[in-house]
Amino acid sequence: MFPGPDPGHHRLPATRIRSHPTPDLTRTLPVGVRALTGRNSTGTTPPIPVAAPRLDATGITADVRVINSGHLVQGPEVAAFEDEFPHLVDGRHCVAVNSGTSASWLTLLALGIGPGDEVVVASFTFAATAGAVRLTGAAVVFSGHLWPGPRRRTRRDHPRTAAVIPVHLFGRPAAMGNLTALVQQQQLALVADATQAHGAAAIRP
Image (cartoon, rainbow, N blue to C red; front, side, top):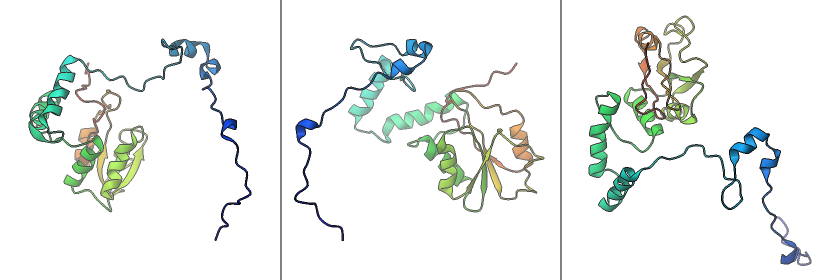
């Protein structure tokens, strides 16, 4: 057992504990970067946003309509989204879920992928891409390229490989090239992770 507190222990008086102002870290930044940060009306340096949400009056009206309907999950708005979204992405069906992770995970489960399988995943991606694979019990095989190529990874040499996940990241479609033909030749599943690229399209010359 650990001994209890020493009754003779002296605590610092409350007046000795003081808060210190946040240091101005912009002084340590290069001049060019410092100019980009700027200052707001209060004189403090605003944070650099990772992503700036774009919500216009139409979006706000739609959000209020959902809240007023009492259906924060499912309901007519979700059904309408599932009907309309395929037209945006030239798809055949749409099933709304709570996140991109769930979408990838459920897709892999629907393909029968699980323990004992390997899934090739692009190494430059968000963590959830590999996380969805691990949720199925399958192993993740990271690839520095979208696809290592049939000579480097074939069903004969790697019989556990069951699927390939190319990632369309930051609104930019992945360079698919002849990936579709390769996975068909190797009889693998192709699961595109387009969580960050809804509606994006590759421009062909």
